[in-house]
Image (cartoon, rainbow, N blue to C red):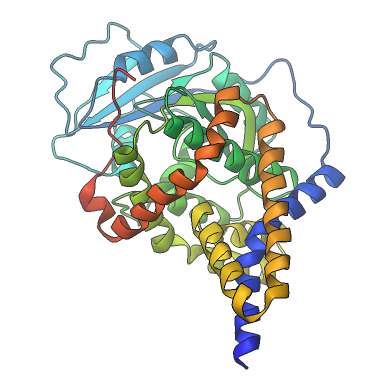
Length: 384
């Protein structure tokens, strides 16, 4: 009986190592060439930029947005708990909003912006206060709205690769964008949401939070669950690029990952709901997305897998060989994600420091319970 339970536990942990390769094989077998049109519709966009406490990066964000190769949009900056005395934007497209009370919530900031729209925007896109946008960002999103999608996730590429932590953070993003974005979407499921660089029908976004008030990190986890429950499919726009500030030091990493780990424990149960909905309705989009939501964070299943392999050295040595084989498959799948798209050589060179990166994420796990008390948002070095 104990041996059976031990085997079952190992399968539950170990399948996470081989799942990316399985998804990749099916992706290569069934991927279809997606047609894109040269000209897209001229949707009216609201670009919502949320800032909490820090405003130093907002001018560069706004400058980037004003260089979009697009005309039909307005920019709404929600400066929550911020000193805006030094913020001056001499452009009619930019609307600076200062909530009367502290919101301390992404969704509250988004809904506050929606309540103060200057006109009834058909679409909205969410940008972080440390993001920069590619000039074709909105045009690339439109490719998918023209196909009938109501929710689209773009790519968050690295804005900075100035430290080892930033490079490893970028490597992680490349992995997730490939498997949880491109591969999932091409297989007929949905891309996972990344917190920014995403766009929605305004009416759909508002309806997802009609009776919900989300505080702390993880609004994107709640939002994607609400979308999947409604039977929506989240498209992945590989060429809709926002450039995201990566963590540059261990303190940033621990605070940020503590919030993310807290979020996974808080919301991973959505995976069961969506998985069972998919089984009940024979809905592949919901089924596969539910499987992905139940997967632990990368470092957690790697450490648990190492633990299983080590224990087996003393009780079932043959199982350790199986674990090494599984680790080889995972390493290959991680490498595939990096070589599938142009990857900066600095990212490859940083990979030798993965054990240190995992160590600090282990520290993040220790602080996860108090994560939202430690920090509400990542504080970036403006000079980085």
